[in-house]
Image (cartoon, rainbow, N blue to C red):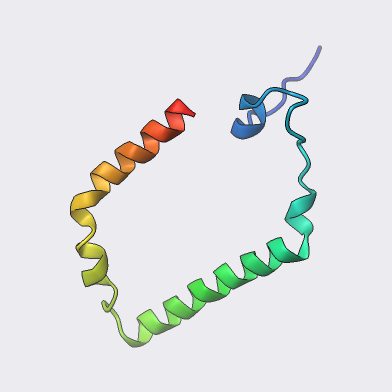
Length: 81
C-alpha cells in the first residue's frame, strides 16, 4: 500500500523536475536574520502598543474601506496562478 504525500500546496502545484524542492534556504544565515528581525520588530511594536495603546488604530481604520477589494484581488491572483 502506497501512502499519499501530505498536500503542501506549492510543492504539489509545480511540475516535478522544473523547480527543486530544496528547503536548505530555511537554515541560511540571511533567512534566519530576516526572521529574527521580523520577530524583533513585532515585539518592539507590541511593547510600544502597551505604552501608547490605540496609536496605530486610526491609521488602520483609514484602510478599512479598501480591505474587501484587497482580499478579492489577493484571492483572484492566487486562483489564477
